[in-house]
Image (cartoon, rainbow, N blue to C red; front, side):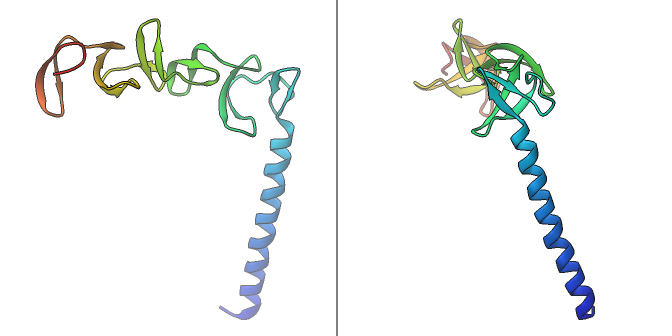
Length: 136
């Protein structure tokens, strides 16, 4: 490849990166909070996943959603705009869904079925086992 072509390609790459950076900044600047409501790039209350400058959150009517919501991964429970992790109404949630496997609930590891510590038979990585309150 000759020097002139290399120089032209390098210039195009640098210019492209510069323009892309400016476009990202201008898009981010269009999303903002006003009176506690987060607005999207169309100046409408946000109703999806958005980065508010601190982290990604799921919004409904401009507020970080707490409760049930649907995104591209299906139906989930949310708490303050994030997938629910932990207990709600005595049921354990992981990634916004009722827990159905081994999870650490903050105290210990338990085997959950439909959000409850399992008592009964189930199959895990060690085969079929009988669980009592989420333990072998």
